[in-house]
Length: 442
Image 1 (tube, rainbow, N blue to C red):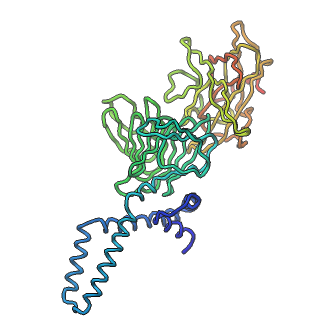
Image 2 (image 1 turned 90 degrees about the vertical axis):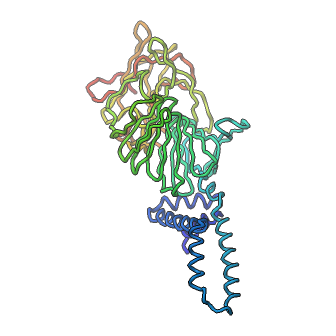
Image 3 (image 1 turned 180 degrees about the horizontal axis):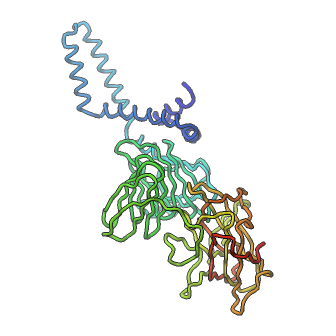
């Protein structure tokens, strides 16, 4: 028996410890054959369980045995009695083996990695029970509660014991149910998931404010707000139901669907469309998470946002004016892209420009920052300053990943860091060509 078989056996026996659970998760991801072996073992387990708990199957098997051995010699009666006792003991053991605790074991979630703080709140029916909030560490496990991922541009990856994985973006809030099967409530934010084939009758169910998705085994991305749910399916299919009117449809591979609070309109999927190469900030942007607040005059004013500084392991409040759309994103970048901003501040200071990017597949491709130097950006009579910064002037942050043409901007904002300088943004856009002459970029 190799190590993989040992881990599967321990899983089926519900005897995995925390380190073995993490080891099994890594082993399942390492090779498709490993996952296949794991699924087949669970299928055999499920078949045996069904045979044990099914009266019809058990009675049929017993009747066949009775007919076949009706004429057996009475001298073997004591052997048959011993066998029946042993069989009954085995059946009782197997029945207990496959009882309810196994379902809860399968729904246990492990935090695999994160680039920002991940908090766990003790919830019941969506309400805080005792005010107890803890920060999760890598390899932490949970089976119930509400997960909150902090930090703009951060990601947190989780894994179920069956090899299913999902990522949550910064700002996401996800409640994990403690019932039978995998039950999740995505209150807000973005989830990208790769789900293994689920047992018959026990799908993964993800509910949002406006929709419910039923997953049997597929990969997909889902973004949830108070007013809309966006689902994009990368492989397989997902059944989605709109809660406002119970309309339901199947969303197949390379298709997307939006479900809002409006009832009565036909619920239809459509091909996933590529993002454009130009973009301008606008208060009517769909599925936008605003960093700042809009004035009646259409000016975006900076507000304090929580920022996790990994280097010092501290959290600060920085003043940002911008927008985030983690999934599918805002705009596609190329080597000739430029960021143009028109802004004003109370006192002369340099202003930072920040963008967070990901690939079309939602793989993280880096955070980048540039600076607009106050001395080189003169103000007009009303205090407004304008700068255009080439994307290649942005410097990689954190993991220092190089810029990748074709990546998608998920977050963009201007910042004065921890200093409140009354930052206001009148215009913020990304241009698709190099025809605009750069101004005052560092």
